[in-house]
Length: 63
Image 1 (cartoon, one colour):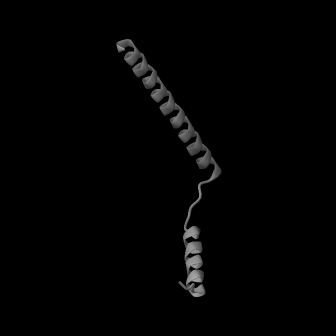
Image 2: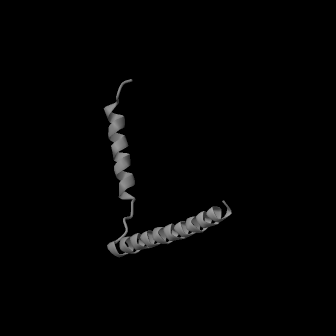
Image 3: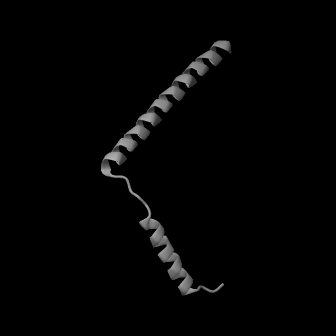
């Protein structure tokens, strides 16, 4: 398997062109979205923990 330096160079140029198309969020958007993700994860975690305790109590009651 031989390596073609010309292909590698064009691949890196293509990679650079794709990275130039990326639009990065500003600080306010990033902060807002990070807080949203964190709060959502905590809320879902609390819901799952609550359901787990309820189901555990119900199973222990039956057994």
